Length: 359
Image (tube, rainbow, N blue to C red; front, side):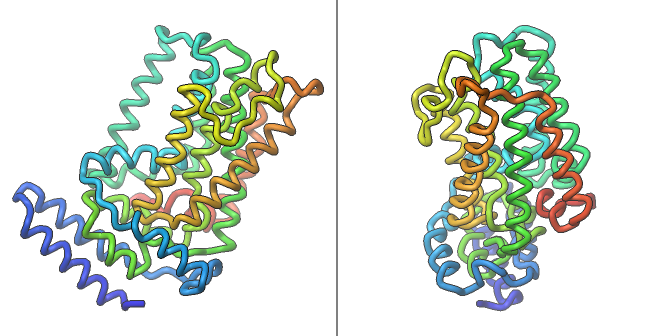
């Protein structure tokens, strides 16, 4: 493994070559890229599992390398950053909760009321903030998106919007299930991260050296290098599955459909289910593309999330097995457990926040 100073010099050299071959208006971008290259090789502890340089680690890195080296260009990278980063972001729960509700029973949604107007304003606001973070215009706006206050406030706001947008019991139950599954799965994932302590590709010298010259937006590489031992498994892919699962199984929240017939591992029977599946795929692609995770990290995250969701899905079925019912207070239990976990274990808090902090 190359030394940190050598990789910094090589990465800076790559950026210099790129800078000389591009237009003058891109010079500020390349200066930011140089800063990213230096920070992304920040010191991180050795991985506990898989061991650095071990068989599993070497195979995983080899499989992941083609994605590390992809370069989609500035605009495509910006678009990919939304599914690639939003599903593990606590702030997004203010939007994901009503989105799940509207996807399960779109006919019951009131699209012309004040609640929908608030929802649209929040969409534009969060997209604008994230664009500023991703493009490096104001990276200091990232910490509030992951803060402990946001972990509590965002799902509360999302629940209020859901109840204002739709009165459908099945839609509300699906939204509650989404929050319940997200909190439950994230608690487990944070524990796995602490136990494995796997180094992210963004703090591995060889991966940074190979990939940095292909990326156009450097801010996310800086973001993921701050919690360098949070690679295994992926919290964002876990969140993406928790978002998609109640949409995949949306019919189970209706009292007329049997639970056993509603669960599909690859549910492509409707447009909304297909879109939910695409969100999971893009989330996994984005995490590996931005050197936040390896392929193994995102695959295991998806398996863990499906297992958690399927267990909750079955456990919450009514006596007849016809309907999955999730009360509005159900997400409060794992939410409280997550907040306690973040309070007692600073490392878990850092992992959830991707190491973001106010400058």
